[in-house]
Figure 1: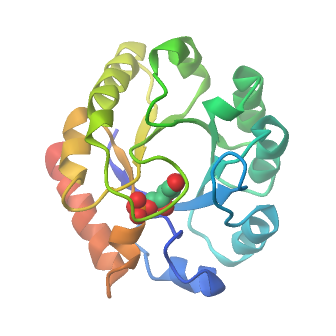
Figure 2: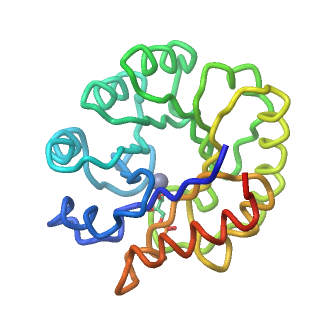
Length: 221
Ligand code: DX5
Ligand code: ZN
């Protein structure tokens, strides 16, 4: 149970990643967006950077793979010591095998969905997972406006998870800020990615703490 803030470093100063992570000590995990210019029309960072960062930060790492051929690449991120590895269901040919492999390597296994991808076809997959990530913008870029149309899917996912009776985190990613986090929490999200809202502030950790407080006020348990 509980709520978590997992800030995205996408809009931070990427030339000093470890220092940027050090600016958000109140974060629960740091969210790292890997993009390959195939699954999404943008290119960010990949395995060598994640491996280097692992050696420099103690904060748990929540890697969000927005890449094609994810079945082939995702296990290496678990091997590199990422505590949570999210693959997109749209990019996976064998999600059950992949989730089991990630878990066997010691990572939490998470499934990501684009805004227009329904959760229902994947209901049977949920016991294999530790987290579901629902994109609340089209993946690819930070700083986009939150898509309200995803709110009903957050609620339907929450209902599926509650029925399961096993604790899975429900993460929302994209446009999460002081203006939108309560709507997400009310719909049932408990884990919140915030990128530009955190790193556009002079004191990013103060934003993390304020978001955590807003989320906890809606979901006190
Ligand atoms: C977008 C990424 C997000 C992004 C969030 O494709 O997955 O993690 O960094 O940034 P904001 O919070 O600015 O929407
Ligand atoms: Zn992300």
